[in-house]
Length: 299
Ligand code: SF4
Ligand code: SF4
Image (cartoon, rainbow, N blue to C red; front, side):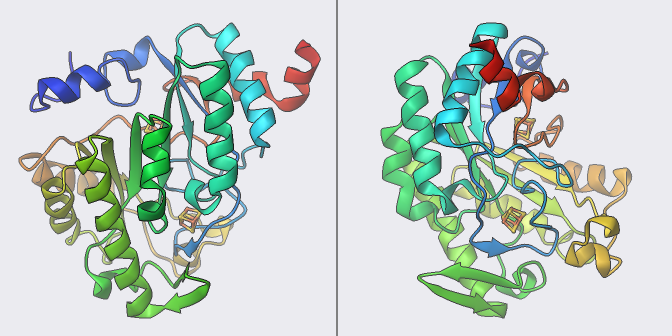
């Protein structure tokens, strides 16, 4: 098995050792997330702020929040215990770019102490255009943007508000700003040769039909991979969708949508929606071995 058939050789060269993108590599290379980014600048109806962001993390999981210094220390501790550790991601528990100081301080410390580790981050995209230069300056390997719509009419049912330019926006206006910023950020990154993956959350009756259009829009802007994830609707977690009785898609509905997008571009089918402080090989979670108290005790 290799990477998705229709990846260009250049893209494949970049991602073949990446546990999240290569079916092969995820058995041999490990990744970790550090949860340094608590705040968020938008509200998604599938989010409960007590838990990890669904941008790139499993909703309904609480990750241990770290300072950039604690995070850097943890990365070193993990790298010395798990030699296959090749990728460090920042994916929450909020939005990494709504916490730019913490996110980039963490990258700076790791670039100094462990320069071989590849960096990645995930974001809802709202603040992305403002940070593309900094992302490039840290040699960030790839960025994941969560894009659930390209039509504000659809977006207004997913996002009750965004916080942008010191102001709270709601309804169609909020969704319009968000989609413009996401598309702009995606174009800026791919123009600089930074790999972009797009995550979408499939929400039956809200954006399920529309995601084929999202797939086209992100492909035409150079995203190299599209990862459609199921809404995990959990009333006990108190998300707006959960309380509304909004259901998630069935496995068949998800597969049918992924199949209908497949002709268009590479689809990712093995994302595990790891927690924001995941550690280890994909499908394995060794985060409990690397809590702050245990790392402190290693010294
Ligand atoms: Fe929650 Fe993430 Fe959405 Fe922010 S971007 S509201 S943290 S799911
Ligand atoms: Fe990889 Fe998905 Fe886990 Fe991120 S959330 S590390 S992309 S499998």
